[in-house]
Amino acid sequence: MQIEVEEKFRYAVVAAVQLPNVSDNEFEASLSELRELAKTLGYEVIRTFVQKRSGFDMTAYLGAGKRQEICSFVNNESAETEDTEPEEIVTNPDHREIDVILVDHEISPSQARNLEKEVGCGVMDRTMVILEIFHRNARSRAARAQVEIARLGYMAPRLREAAKLAGPQGRQRSGVGGRGGGESHTELDRRKIRDRIAELQQEIVAMDVERKTQRARRQERQGFAGVALVGYTNAGKSTLMRALTGSEVLVANKLFATLDTTVRALHPESVPRVLVSDTVGFIKNARAGRLVQVNT
Image (cartoon, rainbow, N blue to C red; front, top):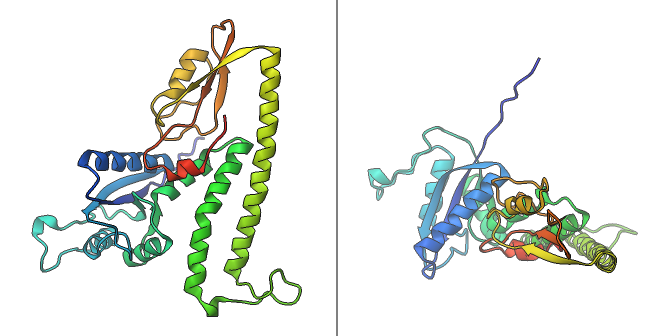
């Protein structure tokens, strides 16, 4: 007997500030891309909140009025105030539970924390969204190591800020024989992050040497030309790869569905032999993408 399992939908809202130097077309393209990234993570975006400002609010990214509007939507409350026109009232008619607010910029740890506290909902900025997708989709040992380095690098400044907020009362001595007596838990975590990043970097160097050696041996033995498919994520590189090589590489209508570089021989084979590489796609505003450089 087949048992049907009901899928639990996860809902998100997108929030973004449009700065004066960003055109409407650029702004909408970035929002559309973030909504597609959310889809890759398994979220359904049910509303987008935008605000035009000369700069980000240093406290919580968005202005106070827009934060209240989002809070009311997330908590199924009326956002009406004395200055609110009836057509401006934003409600969540289906009373769907919002799991996360996706912010279309990289924001500071304090901005994220303050926004989360005020709105009453988890917050993920654009960099965190991309790193989470990379983390889920990395398969090879090299890709997993590079993604972990990026995630640890993203966490480090957030631990530093947590230490500042904790102040002297947050310091806890580690005891006799403990590592780094007088260090707080946050400082110990930061030390562990540095040690882990150094360890991963050594692994990547070793893997890179091994990969270059293997590539040189193949070139000496067979002689071949290399071709790389380069473009934006979800632009159809994997589909073209299938057509050129006849291989069964993954094709999915999602951003970063494939993260690890795939290499296949051109089919039918030519002389010299041609190897085609399906590379990781580009993305706009991709600080996270620059942090993770998956080698071919």
